Length: 160
Image (tube, rainbow, N blue to C red; front, side, top):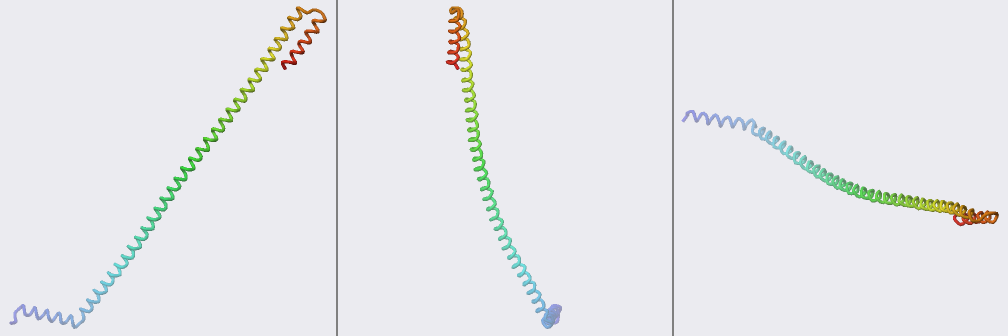
């Protein structure tokens, strides 16, 4: 009965008994419990950090949406302002063109009136000279001179 296996079994039992007597199992158990508690704390911390990161991500997502909405509103406002400025510029240009056209028409009308007056004056002078020449040839003496002077004065008053 005392063979090598028996000695190994007896040694093993004695070793386990010694370990139990010295409380190594309690120390190992405490170390394992400490490690388990530390791992649980790390897992809880990791879960808390994960939740915090998700909250930050959601916050940034919300901020991104708000910024995109604000940018879209700014773009819409810029388009509206550009359309308003274009409309106002077109109206001002149309008003400017109307004023310039009116000024040109007024200048043309004034030039026509002046040209008509110049033509009438030239025609009156020519008629006066022609009448003076005709009357001087036909009417001689004091009666002729008086008739010419009176005709010239009448023509000048009629044409001017």
